Structures are given as structure tokens and as C-alpha cells.
Image (cartoon, rainbow, N blue to C red; front, top):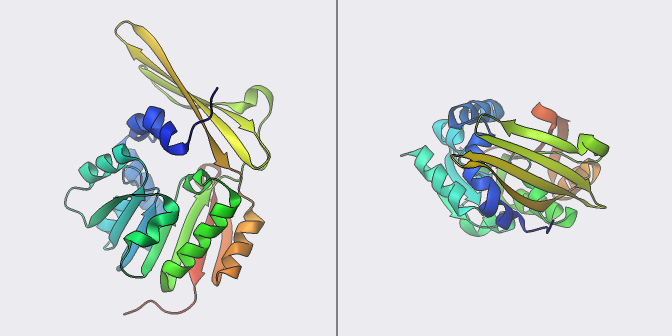
Length: 246
């Protein structure tokens, strides 16, 4: 199967079904509110990297932040704008590493949730994003990310994972290990009146080294910690020294 870019993969397959994949908008927002609860209520600028359809951007705006939502999927940003209504969220279609070009003041909070950090092309790009986040934070601000390290991949048939399925749609993925990446092969079956159809696409995710991530944060002047997150994710919390501006 041909490996395509993350943007092409989402355009071709994942973006149209992403809300469904996350359990629907109501469930996704409930999960998002739980994820950001330790940082809410809040004020000032929050930057949501890989914002998608608004799972975290919307709860942050509800909690009092001015939110800049960055994503490379136009379809997902359009869904976010629809879901957000009149909330204080500005959507930006841009690469994660370019986010500083689209903010006009230091941020109180920068998020990169789900497996978005792994969408960067390499571990060097991950380190670069940490440096960009450190430079963009207000004193006392925090950079929060979740990720899967893909350090110990399943073997054999265990590489095939059911993501979600119902009576009309089934999403399955197969993981294929590489030296510094994991190739993710997504297979989407959808039921139509004439029968079942299949669409397939594959893209790469970076295999993140947690120790390397902590080192990058320390070198950027951040006080960082790793912890266990929900659904097998690792949580990365990195704070910039100082006090938030009044």
C-alpha cells in the first residue's frame, strides 16, 4: 500500500469520519472537557495544535480562554467552526510548526492532544515543536501533549486493531513498525444500499522517545513531567518558569 502524507490521509479517509470515530460530538466534547479540566477555568491565549473538529478547543473557549485552533485539515476546521458557534475560537489552517506565525501574544496554554505529536515527520520536528512552544509561552504557561511512543509494537495478528464499528461503518487499522516511524494502514468499510464498500489509506507516525522529549523540554527551559494518560496515551506536561501575567 502506498504511504501518503498525513494531510492526504486525512483528506482521503479520516476527516469525514473523525467525529464518528471519536464517538460522536457529544461524547468527544465530554472527553475533551475531562482532558482540559486541570487547566480550567482559565484566561488568556490558548493554542490548540491539531485542533480537529474542536474536542479541546471548544471546552477551552467555554472555560474562558481565547483560542487559536491550528490544523492542516480544512474539513475538520470547518466542522470546528460549525460546532463552536459564537465561542472565541479562531481557526488557522497551517502546519503545527508554523503556529507562531499565527499568534499575536504569548500563550497561557498550548495543547497538542490525541496522537497529534506523532503526526510530525520526525523526532527532530518533535524537538523543534517543543522549542517553539517554549518560546511562545507566557511565564507560568504550560505546554500539554499526549502521545503514544509506539516503542513496543504488537506482532502478528495483534497488529490489526478495530478502531470503531457499527451497523453501517467499520474502521480497522494495521500497524507496521519501522526504525523511527510506524506505518498506519487504515481500512474503512462503509455500508451503502448496494452493499459494503472499502476505502484504504496509509500514513506514517513518528515513534517518540519519551526520554528525548524530556531532554528537549529541559534544554528549552521548561520543567517537564511524563505521566500515564487515558487509553494508553502518555501525558507530557511542560511548564515555563515564572508567574502568569495579571
